[in-house]
Image (tube, rainbow, N blue to C red; front, side, top):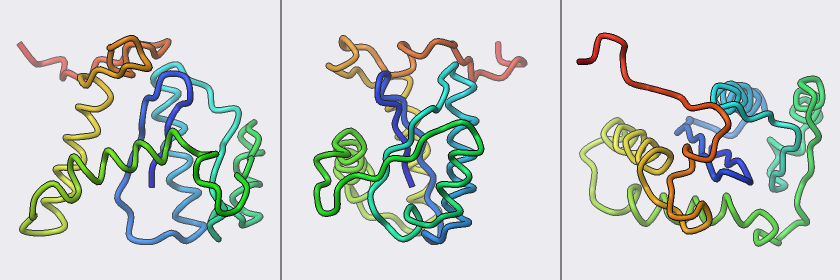
Length: 147
């Protein structure tokens, strides 16, 4: 599951076991909290037409949190191009870039890559800066005991 902010290109990704509606709602709530920590308000959610996104409960959750839910036209992934491009990068640069000894190792590599993508990897759409540099709130993820 992945969510991308359309302006900053800041990404939130979780490797989850399934695509059930309840799982998707949990993911959305965690993604929303992640974006809020970066000063980004989620007011519009654009998704494909998967069963989990077509569910009334998912749309109700988005609306209850002050957002609007917009589903792209069926079979037109280009309408959701930012997240599709992100998914392609994720596949090419981490998921299938090398063999992993376990799913746990693959998930750990994914977490490292997402952190790199958000905080260190330059993006031409962001003026060759990482997405986090455009976020309204600067998040410092270094532990306070770090010296």
